Structure formats: structure tokens, C-alpha cells
Length: 62
Image 1 (spheres, helix red, strand yellow):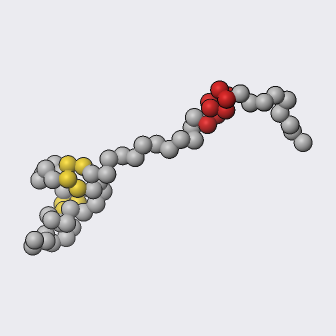
Image 2 (cartoon, helix red, strand yellow):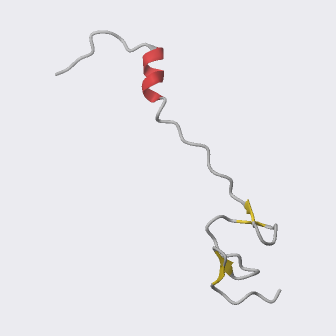
Image 3 (tube, one colour):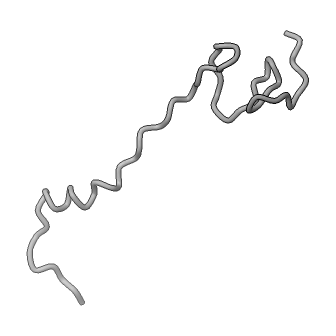
């Protein structure tokens, strides 16, 4: 059975764990190019009914 000959130093342990950290999340809201309002990325704009520049739903009547 393989057994380490020496104790792993905190420095080496930290270098190994440097890739384990979570990335910071991307912003949850983006500004719409046409209306200037905030919306979720990759979601349909429910007010205009558009996604990626084309109408996919009828606009809401709010």
C-alpha cells in the first residue's frame, strides 16, 4: 500500500486545491438592448414576448 514518506505542506496542499474553488457566478440580470430594462439572460422577455430578437410569444397586456 502506498504511504506518503513526508507530510504534505500547507503550501503544496493549497496548490493542489487551487482548482477546487467555485467560480463566481455570472450576473443574474442583463440590460435589454432594445428596451433598456433588466431581464434574465437566456430567458424570454415576457413583456415583449421576444427572445433573441424575434417574437416567440404574444406580448403581455399589462
